[in-house]
Length: 398
Image 1 (cartoon, rainbow, N blue to C red):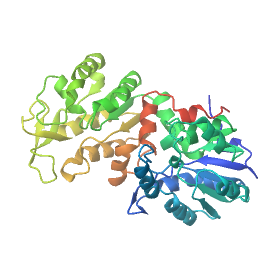
Image 2: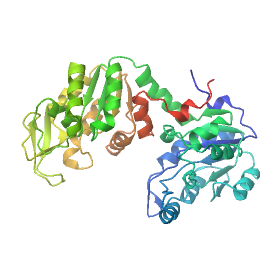
Image 3: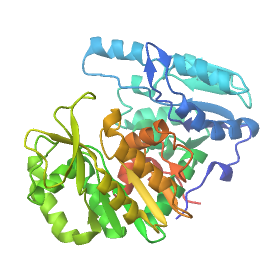
Image 4: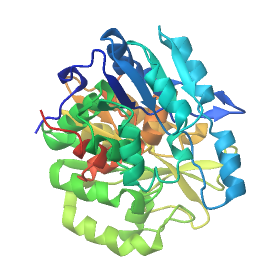
């Protein structure tokens, strides 16, 4: 069933609480990348233009409520004021920052809101009850608004007070960002056009096994790369040297190899190094010939060709996780070539599931060459696992 979107709501003159994802990276108190703020602007601007009174809520970093001293330090470090400053520069309206998460100051700021203006609330994680989805907190925050819009895709896999608590008390809808995410990930995972090829990389099998499991049911081929490939190679009986290996997952990898047959595509050669460093000695060896004291840090050229061949003719591609240690130049080629191969596919829906692969694609200059790059690593991963995302499930159907 399709979810209501912000366009289905009558927002004029209403107090609209929007859960946004303003969890931006910072260094020494300065925002280093404002992508998440910019990604929320279509929904925010739509509400401003349609004369809503906009109340924005987001978390920023983590706050440790167990240790009082650390809690205060975390609050200081993750104060939303820095976001308010940047937001005021990119919207054409008055932004009032309220440095608290409850009480008279917040209630007055909301009461004073004029149509088309914004109140940005302090970091939701200042509240201990946020991550526990405290029902009283959700109810209190809901009392500040008339309507709720979910536009924080990076947080919808968490049942928190601001993502899943507030909408149990208010008429709710998806914002444009979450609507697009659900549409694109849905087109890729729920109703893919075949041939459908999934590419799963990253360091650990344990992090991605649920994704591999779900995608093997729906994809025509599942390509494996990154550190997790070595557990599969070990399961085939190969020597993997000092490569990343999860001993406790070898049996499980064996089961998958038996179950999936040729649906699972593994590296046939690797770039190996004598140490984990940019200045390491490197060479290319076949997957069954990794020297005992060397480690695999990227896929090799024959594997690149194999993966390119596997991708040929694909109409749907989902990619999550790099093929090697792309942050180091000698081990970035596999990820770069897979990026290239996906971007050159004609008439295919190509989706990157957030996280490291999104960072890699953008860093390598392929940011605009994909149908969609997800803004939520954890959320898109859980979507690919076939899990219900609580922050979306709670939103009313059309």
